[in-house]
Image (cartoon, rainbow, N blue to C red; front, side, top):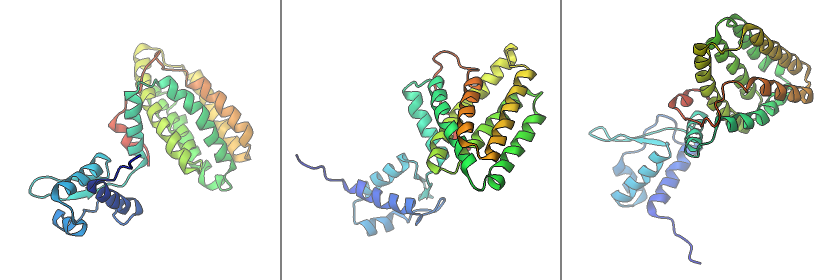
Length: 254
């Protein structure tokens, strides 16, 4: 079997990509001028343009055309990953129900990790309590209540301490939040939004989650979080409603 040889453009793109991912080139930096890159890599101008096109398609640079020229570096971010994953899910017509099922498996794990953090009293609970206070203030504002309670769940993921779960589960949280906001607006208009008593049930569940985190009861917490999610995520799902990605996802993850 004959092995495929990488093209010159791919080799140049790989070197520049490594410089971006290693931090040698920082977000907002400009790549050297094309003439300088041509001298460094000793390739043709079409090969260099192709290399830059590869990096631009990956979202790692923006090639500025016209008199100014130049290429600006963009480091990869979790928010950009969420947006791209959303596009793939939209293309594959994955339903929000499917996203919800994944979240019901992943988020309880993140919640239990919050309870295992030795610094949970200083790094986890203060942030959760602040969001919870805002939830109490918004209990009579249906849409705002939905937004802030979703922030509570997003914080449970962001504070779990495991960077891989933060990225993966955080992406799903962002996708779920977009459909939940749409549902809240529809439910309010139709008069189907859960009443104050139901909202207060959710508030008490969040209070119990914080108590279990404080006590370090990871196993009990994971089981309770799963039940809580099952109770709350059943709202707002139209049968077969598919994921729709949005540029707003790019602003929702750190």
